[in-house]
Image 1 (spheres, rainbow, N blue to C red):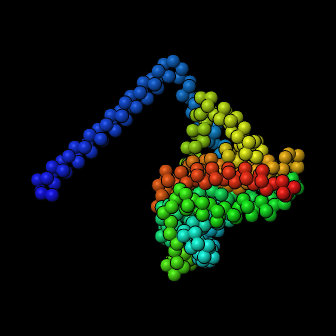
Image 2 (cartoon, rainbow, N blue to C red):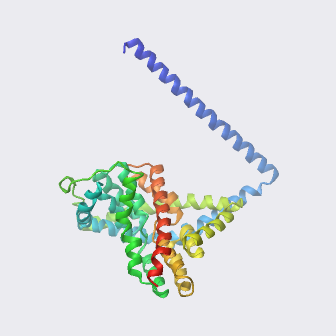
Image 3 (cartoon, rainbow, N blue to C red):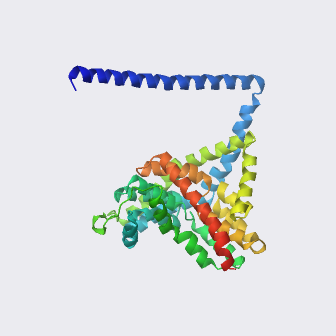
Amino acid sequence: MSKPAEQLHEIVDLSTGAEEAGKRAGGSNRIGLLSVALLGIIFIISPEIIGNAFTSMLDKVKPIVVDIFLMGNVGVSIILSVMVGRALERMGFTDALIRLFVPLANRMKINPAVVIPGVYNILGDINAAGRIGGPIMKQAGATRDEQCIAIATMVQSQQSFSCFMLGLIALSLAGINAFPVVLCAVFAPLVIVPFVLSRTIYRNTRAVALKDLPSFTPKTPPFQTIFQGAREGAELLFLLVIPAIAVIYSLIGLLDYVGVWKPFEQSLSGFLGFVGVHPGTGITAIMASPTLAMGQLQEIAASIDPRLVVGAFVLAASGLPLSDVLGQIPAIWSVNSDVTAREALTAAIIGIIMRFITVAIIAFGLTPLLV
């Protein structure tokens, strides 16, 4: 291309870019003017609407952020989970785990690192799993598709050990053999989910030879590793988890105020019964806390249909509540991996959909064999 032609091409590109920017700015200005006009009308007609809407948002956010994450055990568990995860990493846990998974991963033609976030989630916390697993995925040379597979696999396992133990007690009270349920619901997805997704949605995967994998064991001194892990956990809690929680629950509060949220909850209750989950504990797991849901399930496990007990356990043993799926996972993985917040959100939603399918299969297919 000649120099005059190149200059003309650059001028056309600049003018096109300026035109597109002008259109975007014009759209933003119109939305802004509409917002100002709407707020002005509300101030004139019924100014208390704004205050009441804000109060509704505050009432939803405060119990979760303050009572559960700041004053309860959840916030402390996140800090401890990162600290423990970093300690395990320093002791060579990650290297050993990946090398155990290499033969099976090579058969599936996928990077063995995809299993790491899921296993760390089983051992600790879903937020810590993202903070630790994201950089490991990058270090292992995983593709963006493989990192998405790792997220979808991660949300197949419970995010707290207390949730797991309370669920086992509930299964025992219902007279259900827990071992097959745990095997099918917690460990089998570490293999099945990567296999299914690598053949369908996320196909850009590749096998990695053991000799081509780097070492994942850091060289930092043990005490420094533990201290830095605790600091990372605090940063994760205050800079990513709590802001994400505040966003999600403020939106729920606003939807509740305008009358949209209750019909959604009622529809959700009907859906949960359809897939084999006790509606009350299922809604608690989805909207608030799977651990709390398992605590509730213990009280009624002996008096309800065993299928609903198993379904509730399998659902709770996942990446729920929705605030994690919609807020925390995208926020954490977009910072600690190669995927964008949108890609992380999409992968998490795909994983949760697969989890609901697992719930129905195990609740209706496996439970009759265990009672």
